Image (cartoon, rainbow, N blue to C red; front, side, top):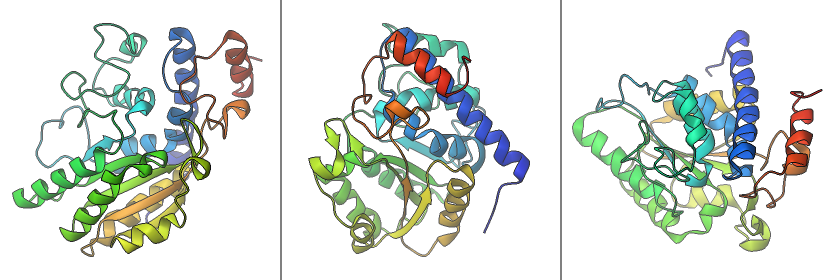
Length: 279
C-alpha cells in the first residue's frame, strides 16, 4: 500500500487548514456560496489534485490527463481553490466568486472556468459523464483515470444508479467514484430525507469494488485512492469517504443549516476563533 511521507502528509494537512480558513473568509465576505459541503470535501479534493491525479495547468488539454468531475457542483468554492493552487487561474480571482461576469460561477462551468472538466449543478449527472470519459479513454488507448466526486444526498438521484449499472457493464475499472459521505443534505439528515440503507452493499450489488476511508485524514484518503488505482480488475471502484458536513467549525458540523446559508459576522468571528486564526 502506498503511503505519504510524514513531511508531505503535514504539508497537505496544512493546505487543508489554509483552504478551510480562506473559504470561510471568502463566503463571509461575499455573503454567498455553499459552506458545509465545501468543508466536507476539502481533504478529498486537496489529496486528489495535489497528490493523486495527473492534472496540471500545463496538461489540461492532453488526451492522457486524468479527469476530476465534481458532480456535487455546489461544492465549487473548494474546487476553485484547488484549481487556483494548481495554477489554472490566479488565486486573487477567487474574490469574484458568484459575481456577475465572473468565470467562477456558483456551480462549475466547463465553458468558462479553466480546469473544470464538466459543468455540474443539477445533481446526478457526473457519474454518467464520467462513464463516457472512461469509455472514450479506453477507445483511445489512454490509461488515464476518471474521478467523480458525489454527494451522498446526490445518491437519491436515479441516474446515479443507472450510471452505476452502466459502468459495471462496460468494465470501466479506471473510473473511481468518491462519495463525500457526510450524511447531511439540503433539507436535513440524509437518513431522514431518503434512507439509503446498506450503501456499501448497494454498490457491490451493481458490480463495483467498494472501499472506505476517513475522508478527513489525508493519509487515509491517499492510500485508499492509490489502492483503487491499482485494482484494475474489470470493475469500477467507489470510495465511501466518511466525512462531516461543515468539518472544522463545531457549530457548522452535522447540520443542514450551513448548506448554503450566508455566514453572519458573529458566526465568522466564532469560526475564526475555532480555527485559531483570531485569538
